[in-house]
Length: 72
Image (cartoon, rainbow, N blue to C red; front, side, top):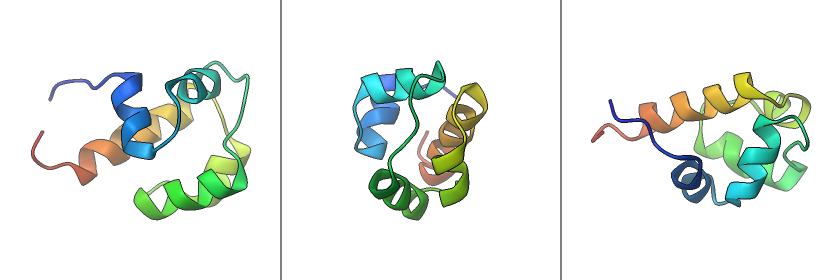
């Protein structure tokens, strides 16, 4: 399994790469609109997307990416 970049994750989630970086470094959280859309796209709960940030949340998003992209 090849690791994807933050930019590729951002494209998949339809957010900026800077937001992914900021969430990972605990400087920002996802907004409600983004969280609803991302929750629908992935297996990550809306509550996690609203209330969590940091490496654990980004890890959940990477896992969701791999689960939803079987061709990798």
